[in-house]
Image (spheres, helix red, strand yellow):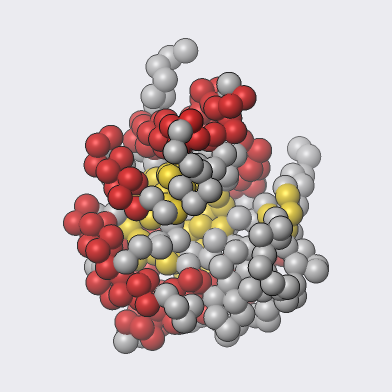
Length: 311
């Protein structure tokens, strides 16, 4: 069996507003209680000396990160994610078409075929989530592009429900529309707002519906009091942690390449904000993460079925 490429693509730096420090930060102090990174992109290379997925996982293991959820954004990265998860016991996969990719597939006339392949990938044993999917109005104007995003999002919701998988939400400049869609279509039992970017009001809506909030390095940023307010409000049984690496590197290394091994910085900051013990918070979040995705060494909890029938 051929070994997959160590990563699929390089980070797009064209939108960077200023030069970045391209060196990976040093290893943090190891955690005493292990944690999971429930959203990362091992397929994207970054920095002056890119780390392939094996190096990233080894560094993560050395500081107490027990495993990661590797997340796809299109067909290529979703295939890669499912393949890596099948080979590597520290990896589970999420597969989906990112909302910013949906208009491209729709314009090519291939959105239905792409969604059908996402459903096929969803039935692999170590694919445990559909994501990241949702709505992103930051770069998409009214019209056909947003229509494609809605169509894709609703299809992903159904794929998650029919296959008994968690749903990872990407929500940018579309809080009300994402919530409306979830309530109208019916959210999967385990729904995660990846890289939560809302405020206490949205956090309360999530809490009322039993939706999980996943906090990335952004919660450590000086200007992110809205995230800390949300963290304080939401029941801790609904709290997860992630890197969204190679993006959103936590303070004190903001702007440098991110990786799963840096999640202890975010976890320790969250414990400080909540006034709780780091190990206690790690144990709780680890339990939450396994509740959402299952065990890293176990088969799926439910038997998959196809939302597209027996064709």
